[in-house]
Length: 155
Image 1 (cartoon, rainbow, N blue to C red):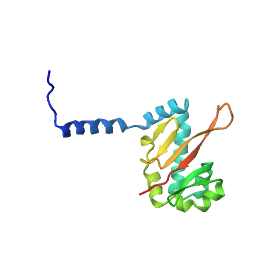
Image 2 (cartoon, rainbow, N blue to C red):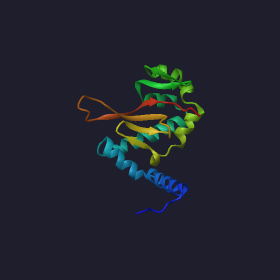
Image 3 (tube, rainbow, N blue to C red):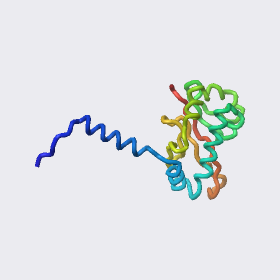
Image 4 (spheres, rainbow, N blue to C red):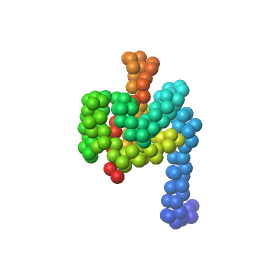
Protein backbone atom coordinates (compact mmCIF):
# COMPACT_ATOMS: atom_id res chain seq x y z
CA UNK A 1 0.00 0.00 0.00
CA UNK A 2 1.36 3.35 -0.99
CA UNK A 3 0.56 6.42 1.10
CA UNK A 4 -0.20 9.70 -0.62
CA UNK A 5 2.66 12.21 -0.56
CA UNK A 6 2.16 15.43 1.28
CA UNK A 7 4.20 18.51 0.52
CA UNK A 8 6.90 18.94 3.14
CA UNK A 9 5.83 22.53 3.79
CA UNK A 10 2.30 21.36 4.66
CA UNK A 11 3.63 18.76 7.09
CA UNK A 12 6.00 21.24 8.74
CA UNK A 13 3.26 23.87 8.99
CA UNK A 14 1.02 21.41 10.77
CA UNK A 15 3.80 20.41 13.14
CA UNK A 16 4.51 24.05 14.01
CA UNK A 17 0.84 24.76 14.58
CA UNK A 18 0.54 21.77 16.89
CA UNK A 19 3.74 22.69 18.77
CA UNK A 20 2.68 26.27 19.44
CA UNK A 21 -0.72 25.07 20.65
CA UNK A 22 1.05 22.85 23.21
CA UNK A 23 2.78 25.87 24.69
CA UNK A 24 -0.38 27.95 25.02
CA UNK A 25 -1.24 28.02 28.72
CA UNK A 26 -3.61 29.66 31.10
CA UNK A 27 -2.90 30.79 34.64
CA UNK A 28 -4.96 27.85 35.87
CA UNK A 29 -2.79 25.41 33.90
CA UNK A 30 0.35 26.94 35.40
CA UNK A 31 -1.25 26.69 38.86
CA UNK A 32 -1.99 23.00 38.30
CA UNK A 33 1.52 22.32 37.00
CA UNK A 34 3.12 24.06 39.99
CA UNK A 35 0.90 22.20 42.44
CA UNK A 36 1.83 18.91 40.74
CA UNK A 37 5.56 19.67 40.74
CA UNK A 38 6.05 21.63 43.95
CA UNK A 39 3.26 20.40 46.21
CA UNK A 40 -0.40 21.00 46.92
CA UNK A 41 -1.35 24.70 46.80
CA UNK A 42 2.28 25.68 46.01
CA UNK A 43 1.05 27.84 43.14
CA UNK A 44 -0.11 30.53 45.56
CA UNK A 45 3.39 31.02 46.94
CA UNK A 46 5.00 30.87 43.48
CA UNK A 47 2.51 33.28 41.92
CA UNK A 48 3.00 35.77 44.75
CA UNK A 49 6.78 35.43 44.50
CA UNK A 50 6.75 35.99 40.74
CA UNK A 51 4.51 39.06 41.03
CA UNK A 52 6.64 40.57 43.81
CA UNK A 53 9.87 39.89 41.91
CA UNK A 54 8.50 41.35 38.69
CA UNK A 55 7.33 44.52 40.48
CA UNK A 56 10.70 44.88 42.21
CA UNK A 57 12.67 44.56 38.97
CA UNK A 58 10.39 46.91 37.03
CA UNK A 59 10.49 49.55 39.80
CA UNK A 60 14.29 49.15 40.22
CA UNK A 61 13.92 48.12 43.87
CA UNK A 62 17.40 46.64 44.21
CA UNK A 63 17.01 45.87 47.92
CA UNK A 64 13.82 43.88 47.33
CA UNK A 65 15.38 41.95 44.45
CA UNK A 66 18.49 41.22 46.56
CA UNK A 67 16.32 39.83 49.35
CA UNK A 68 14.71 37.36 46.94
CA UNK A 69 17.92 35.53 45.99
CA UNK A 70 19.38 32.35 47.45
CA UNK A 71 23.04 33.00 48.33
CA UNK A 72 25.56 32.10 47.20
CA UNK A 73 24.13 32.58 43.73
CA UNK A 74 25.64 32.23 40.28
CA UNK A 75 24.77 35.21 38.12
CA UNK A 76 25.92 36.40 34.76
CA UNK A 77 27.78 39.67 35.33
CA UNK A 78 28.80 41.53 32.17
CA UNK A 79 28.51 38.29 30.19
CA UNK A 80 30.51 36.09 32.59
CA UNK A 81 29.32 33.72 35.29
CA UNK A 82 30.19 34.90 38.76
CA UNK A 83 29.40 33.48 42.18
CA UNK A 84 28.00 36.14 44.48
CA UNK A 85 28.31 35.16 48.12
CA UNK A 86 25.92 37.63 49.70
CA UNK A 87 23.53 40.54 49.30
CA UNK A 88 26.34 43.12 49.47
CA UNK A 89 28.22 41.46 46.59
CA UNK A 90 25.01 41.27 44.55
CA UNK A 91 24.09 44.91 45.09
CA UNK A 92 27.58 46.00 44.00
CA UNK A 93 26.99 44.52 40.53
CA UNK A 94 23.19 44.81 40.28
CA UNK A 95 23.26 47.15 37.27
CA UNK A 96 25.65 44.85 35.39
CA UNK A 97 23.27 41.93 35.95
CA UNK A 98 19.90 43.59 35.47
CA UNK A 99 20.64 45.27 32.17
CA UNK A 100 17.84 46.94 30.23
CA UNK A 101 17.35 43.79 28.16
CA UNK A 102 17.08 41.53 31.23
CA UNK A 103 14.69 43.99 32.89
CA UNK A 104 12.63 43.87 29.72
CA UNK A 105 12.53 40.05 29.82
CA UNK A 106 11.21 40.18 33.40
CA UNK A 107 8.72 42.95 32.59
CA UNK A 108 7.29 41.07 29.59
CA UNK A 109 7.01 37.69 31.31
CA UNK A 110 3.42 36.63 31.98
CA UNK A 111 2.55 34.23 34.77
CA UNK A 112 0.44 32.22 32.35
CA UNK A 113 3.53 31.69 30.16
CA UNK A 114 5.96 30.53 32.85
CA UNK A 115 7.78 27.27 32.19
CA UNK A 116 8.09 24.93 35.17
CA UNK A 117 9.76 21.59 35.72
CA UNK A 118 11.03 19.67 38.73
CA UNK A 119 14.09 21.94 38.88
CA UNK A 120 12.11 25.15 39.22
CA UNK A 121 10.37 27.91 37.32
CA UNK A 122 11.92 29.75 34.40
CA UNK A 123 11.57 33.41 33.50
CA UNK A 124 12.37 34.25 29.89
CA UNK A 125 12.36 32.12 26.76
CA UNK A 126 16.06 31.29 27.17
CA UNK A 127 16.03 30.52 30.90
CA UNK A 128 17.35 33.91 31.91
CA UNK A 129 16.21 33.53 35.53
CA UNK A 130 15.27 30.43 37.56
CA UNK A 131 13.47 30.27 40.89
CA UNK A 132 12.26 27.48 43.15
CA UNK A 133 11.54 26.51 46.72
CA UNK A 134 14.43 26.19 49.16
CA UNK A 135 13.86 23.74 52.02
CA UNK A 136 13.91 25.30 55.47
CA UNK A 137 14.70 22.06 57.32
CA UNK A 138 15.80 18.53 56.49
CA UNK A 139 12.26 17.18 56.18
CA UNK A 140 11.47 19.93 53.65
CA UNK A 141 7.93 20.38 54.96
CA UNK A 142 8.21 24.10 54.37
CA UNK A 143 10.13 25.95 51.73
CA UNK A 144 10.84 29.52 50.77
CA UNK A 145 10.82 30.49 47.11
CA UNK A 146 14.04 32.17 45.99
CA UNK A 147 15.91 33.04 42.80
CA UNK A 148 18.44 30.24 42.24
CA UNK A 149 20.25 31.36 39.10
CA UNK A 150 20.49 34.45 36.89
CA UNK A 151 21.75 33.51 33.44
CA UNK A 152 21.37 36.99 32.08
CA UNK A 153 20.36 37.92 28.59
CA UNK A 154 22.57 37.89 25.53
CA UNK A 155 20.34 40.16 23.47
